Length: 294
Image (cartoon, rainbow, N blue to C red; front, side, top):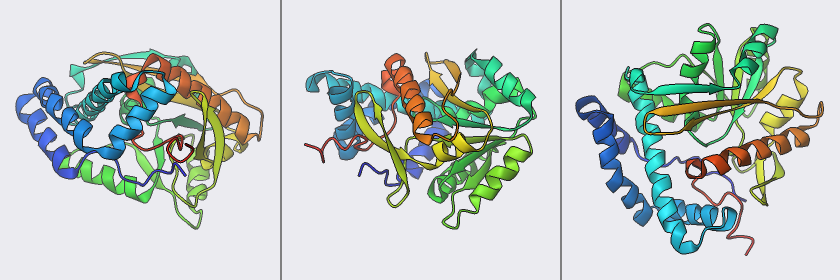
């Protein structure tokens, strides 16, 4: 299956090096270093390069020759989003500008005082969403539902930065106790955030069409979102230029208690975003099982 292995692109040492450059030389110099780092990953990240070529060639229709150049740019943009996140956490938020699209949906959601579920994907730079949401409501509490491995990785990065995030984490547990944490947070009018595009082996999945081919998705966010009787919205934070971000919010319209319908609306939403920002797809594995299905 096209399951995620739990390993993200990049290494702790690499992140610390970029943090050093951001602190001492600034964001633009860190971007300059990326020209070489992106080329390194193109040559030596076998799985990442292979999956990128499959994405650009099979899903977006570029030739294999063109796809190598597309993967290089994808690596570069991914590196930029990491640098931007670190720069913002280091207090350099004023180096970037922000644009809202659909913020009235979030205003209405918060007014209902029922909490809400936000579903995003590994596209753009969702990890800086808290800075957008704080401008809409500085008191809104975000809870990110994540795996233990991802939680540890985020904690290590924050410690390396000597930075703090206002996001609370709900770690998925085998005994399903995280469901009670989610219900408690919603009861306090808090926001629950999922990324709906990665799963581990052994977890329940649902399938849907994304960019013309079927893929598997974690069932949890869509089962919960379709049954908890709270508003569900899709949220993406996309990088438009070197210094400008665009937050998109779209309300999910789906049949009540129909997880498959919610998933189908989600994949349509992700496809729409990727057609606008094709270089900001950051799932570096064989997402569509293309190699297996040959």
